Image (cartoon, rainbow, N blue to C red; front, side, top):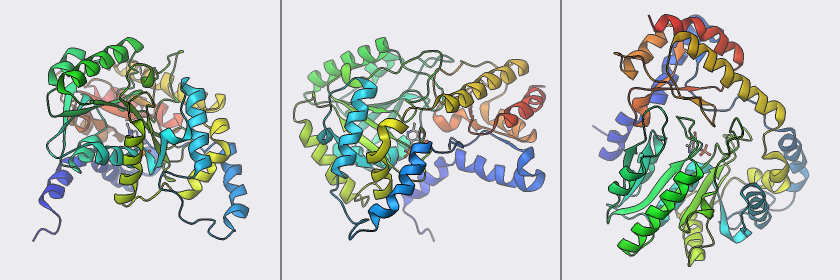
Length: 399
Ligand SMILES: Cc1ncc(COP(=O)(O)O)c(C=O)c1O
């Protein structure tokens, strides 16, 4: 007898490429030892949180040793944390937000769920360029809505703006983008974001209600070669930023994220209030209080990657490019993130190629798991010695 709902059973069947790789990795590590398995499957930062975070945590002991020091707080988050976050977003993206425009959430994942719960009705659609973070489909499904992927251009992963425009219909409630992108590493240009804003403005007018542009941007902190990530609020008024400190501060386990609503939209306070309410009724109640206090203490100082941490990621990127070149694999050099999304070799689909890599003790995730078959994702959240050691395996898998 099935104990979970039919929808969840269905979701589980389709959800688990990363999970499957994680389990396969566990088996391989048992058999060969962790040092001999090259695990590029998980996008979980392996670096230490910045020193400012560590000392802010140490300083919390006295603060929480007060009555209700770890008690409930307003559902939007502590006022000082909201203000510190708004100040930092203003400095980082050249915006003019106040603390009232942001809501603290349980990671970016919790933020996306709170936002979707606030704006989506059953039967509505959310458009998303593919490849995409697979959880988006489940988050839409949580509220009876559907994700409608539109494939980006092969290899470069630039947006198919005509395809997005053609996919918009009366059921479209939002378009979600993720730039820098997991898994492709692409950063959408200012011209693409501007044009997307124009398309959405025209469609919102045509259908008589806003189509939101949701910008999921937990990788904004990590770009290379002078590439910068356009600030979506400057290009479209019905834009909402969702992000977190999971990746830049290596705080994925502490679950601190946020939703920022563009104050340029009319009645923006209504949407903020909606997200505060859904944050509560989804049972999140608040973002974790320790993470919020840490943000209030040092978000401005800690949130830019230190030069030494940046260099670690840049070196891994350079080494992986060399390894892929030597193996003869085709790829677009990622402009941001710690991911690569190379093309599976001619005549071999991505799932088949992943199996070949596994035979070489290399773990990667097939593009099929990101709505983009024919490619595979490598996450560079491991020491560079694993990248170097995997070189031979990549070459062997190509034979
Ligand atoms: C594109 C994207 N969005 C959202 C998330 C969720 O981030 P968080 O851990 O902050 O919930 C991730 C995590 O990997 C991600 O890659």
